[in-house]
Length: 321
Image (cartoon, rainbow, N blue to C red):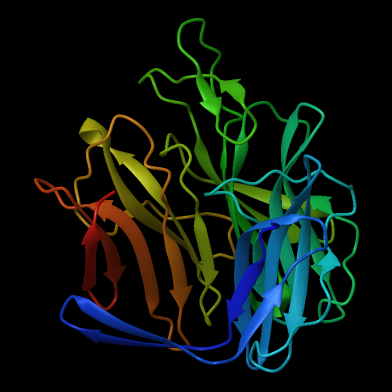
C-alpha cells in the first residue's frame, strides 16, 4: 500500500496545564501521486490559500510535488511536479522539501546530481499551476554536504533560503561521519564532529548572494528562516555551545541578509550530546513582528523529552522514546 498525505484544513488547540485537546476540523484532503510513496510534507498559507509540498518516490527515484488550495485547505489542485530534473531530489526526516507562499509559491529541496550536493529552488508565479526551471541557491560546484534547508519570502517578493553547508570541512584521515541522506562519508573538524556552517542566500536577478551566518554548528538538524513585516530576517538552528551543549540559537539581519548579528541562545536547556539530535527548530513570525519558535529538547536529569515554545514561554511534555 502506497503512503499518502492527509492535510487537515483547520486545527483548534486548547492548552490546560500540560495537556492539550486537539480537535481536527472535518475537512481533510488526501494528496498523493499515483504509484509513488509520499513523505516529507511541508505547508504554507496566506489568507485562504494553502500550499503543500512533499516528496514522491517511485522505483528509487524521488521528485518534489506541490498542490494548491484556495479554500482554506478543503480542496486542492492536482499535484504539480516542482523539480524539472527528474529524480534529482533527496529527502530524510530533517530534510523534507520546504515551501513558502506569498505572491509566488517557492519550494526548496536538497538535490544530489552526480556527486555534488546542492540546494535547489523553483518558483511558481501562477499560483502553483506551473513551476519555472529550478535554480541552485549557491555557487557551484561545492565540496561537502549541504541540506537541512528552509525558505522564506520577504518584502518585494524576495526569496531567502537557509541551510547547513559543509564546504569548509577540512579533510580528515582519521574519522569520518556519514551524510545520513546520501550515505557519503563527511570530513570531521578539529573537535571530532562534522564541520557544518549556517549559510543564508538571497535570490537576485543576477543569481544568489550568499552570507555566512554562523560556523561550526550542529550537524543534521533542520534550520528555520522567517522575514518580519519590517524586513528583518531571523535565522534559527541548533548550535554547539561549550561542552557540546546542543541548544537552539537565533540570529537577526537588519540589512536584507547582507550581514547577521551574533547568535542569541533561545533557552538554556543545556542538552549535552556528543552527537547530533536530528531535531531542529521551527519558527514563525506574527503581524506584529513577534517571533515564535518551537524545538525538541531534553529536560536535564530526567528521561522526559520536551517541546520548547518561546514567546510566550509554554512547555509541553511527553515521554521520551
